[in-house]
Length: 269
Image 1: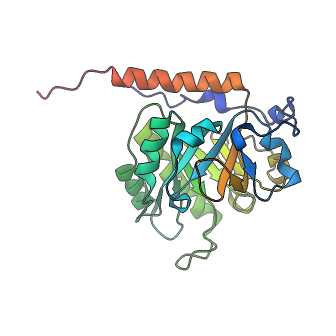
Image 2 (image 1 turned 180 degrees about the vertical axis):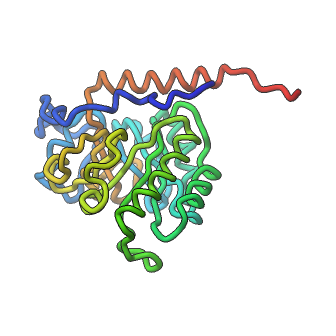
């Protein structure tokens, strides 16, 4: 099946959705909470479509409980740089699907290795499954890295990103989403990549207070979330759209999966 690179257009939702009646006083669904809540992101807790992002740090996850808690989507760490593969990726990838949670994979950019090598690493480790969310490129400065703590030039960072984004799109058939934090966005991304969707980290204020003129699809609003089925803290996220928007998007993914699974196996000539 020929993949549609714009399979996820419904994510292009204006920032104004945040003010469309998603009050901060609603009770959390299914036991979702935050160990260290910040009043600046209270609105995110009450937005109707909630998700998490996970890696091996979360250990073993009971995906059935996560689904029962009202989590609609999950982004799962797959790869980092050109030589790191998250040891829990495949367990999480399969577990989320079995529980019926919409899932996607993300790659963490490492600025001290070639983008082409990172692209090959991602492609060789992430299944090209149908019916998944677009892949995510996580771009932040590797400030805490013992091997790559320094920053590269803005021009070089953008060039590396372009290589990686192109490879991820070619592999999955979906235009990737860019995840970033306020500092990297200010240093590198302002005014760039305007034809991509963004997933923004902002744990103390609404995204519009931290990111100048940037619409977003997902908002990571806390790193101290509590979700049944996950032991300890987990990053929580909200989707910038209505339940109807989300339903339409998921139906597109389901249609993609059905169409792919219905394709006859190729026959060698």
